[in-house]
Image 1 (cartoon, one colour):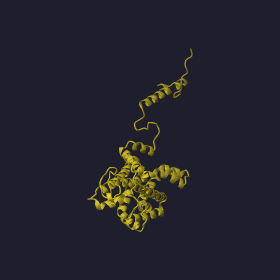
Image 2: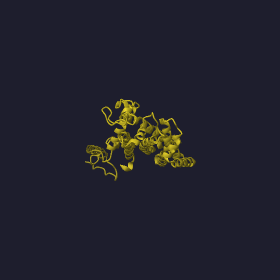
Image 3: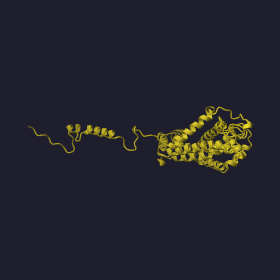
Image 4: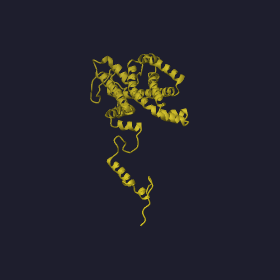
Length: 329
């Protein structure tokens, strides 16, 4: 019987290559199956796909009770601002002087003001003006500030220096004093002069945030790689930098919305913001301030509605900030 030929060192036997020691491909498949049965690795997404910043943020927000409570309050306020007749069927401008400053009565749970108007109806209808001013002013300041700040951070140079000096000028204007001077010239008493004033003095803060975010984002490796592959300035800014720099702007704008609502009420209280016949919490608080001892209910309800609204938007902004900031995870 012929003897087997000696094998050269390092050579592979075809039979051993098909079925190596330890089970080979079958052993590897078995190991992977056991790993899947044991579950995904700690910290890994259940689907096996890496989640984005926005999906991670939404995942955290759904489990945050602060976000859920504030979101429910805001949804309710927006609904009654759009359709106040859902919970208040009366006319906020219909008054009866015979019932002036009277307390709670059947069908009128909040009592009456100095003109005999139903405080409950005016409180419900006052949400429309305050929330409209807050949302429009926030949207305008966010768009203007993001555009100017983003361009300044992306291009730099003289454009950045010029915008920074202009923003410093607006930062130096006291917002209440500026409102007294600016709005005292306007006699219409409608929403839009107040919105324009808030946008005028609100965009520098958001522009600073947008500028810093863009400056940080454009230094990342993926932006440098896109630039090396020939991407133009517009594509870099819109496709690569802006989506990754917008999170801080959203957080600041959400918190600012609550402060803008409070600012509108302050200006209306001082007599330079919204004016009758517009129904506003600030106007009602101003009218009730002189009768706080005789009829405290006139001040309690509009002031309480204003406080809850501002608190809800600030809580929402805090929850969004915690969800979008990876350092707080």
